[in-house]
Amino acid sequence: MPSFNSVSVIGAGAWGTALAGVAARAGRKVTLYARDAAGAAEIATTRINPRLPQVRLDASVAVTCEIARAATADIILIATPAQHLREAVAALAPHLARATPVIATAKGIERGSHKFMTEVIAETAPDASPAILSGPSFAEDVARGLPTAVTLAAKDEALARALVQALGSSTFRPYHTADVRGVEIGGAAKNVLAIAAGIVMGRNLGASAQAALTTRGFAELVRLGRACGARGETMAGLSGLGDLILTCSSPQSRNLALGIALGRGETPARDKLAEGEFTAPVLIELAASQNVDMPVSNAVAAILRGAVTIDDAIEGLLTRPFKAEG
Image 1: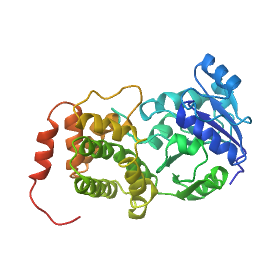
Image 2: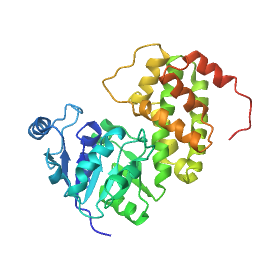
Image 3: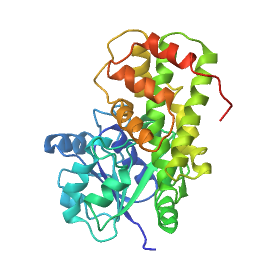
Image 4: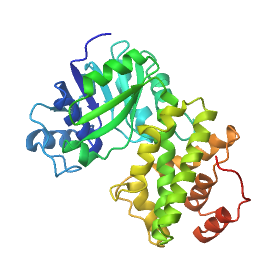
């Protein structure tokens, strides 16, 4: 397994900036790519990203708007939203060395194709080595160097292990696995379930309802994971249960905030992306193709497209036939 001395982060949003700091703390040579030349110049000069103004960018991190320069790193982290991943990888692909690890950090499923993030990478950059980083984390916490644990998956577990060694530090602890699909499903499904949790909070349905929603939502996540070939220990780990708990309880969660606004009957803020809104319709289509019952996720998708009111969705869930645990 080759040594990984340099890291490029594609996407200079809050999460990309935080990950650039992660790689710098791990002792790597780091390049942060921003598509906009003026934005790249501003970050390079001020060392402050307006998307994450609370944290100063490490002095060692180079900032560029040249994709060919960013593509020369030993490891590529793609920190763009899920629906923009294909475009980012397509721009990178002509410049990548063979077998370069390309790690997706978005939690979602591509609309239209229903492909997971590593599948998009494999299709768009066939010579790359796809991987996925997921788990309970928020950009500001990670950027500030607060203790964080995540999961990193690649089909080749030796590669996943090497990537963990290259990116890990005393405050950022990745766990490796070869269960790529389990990590991807855990990360994507929990965003949809966090919207449901927010609706419960916005409707003031109480802590008992919140606990029931989280546990039943996790049961859905596990059912879909098993149907798609995920391993049980991954679904119950950081990328599944851990990420779900964080996203369904933290005020930093954009998906939770979206659900709270919907539950209160307010117009949701659109200044920040909530991945679950884009993932919900794709998730239920995937579940249907696998004959997996996901009533909570179905209710969220129906609410988002305006097919049902929140009160009717809640009544529908509460009047479902009684069944055994599982």
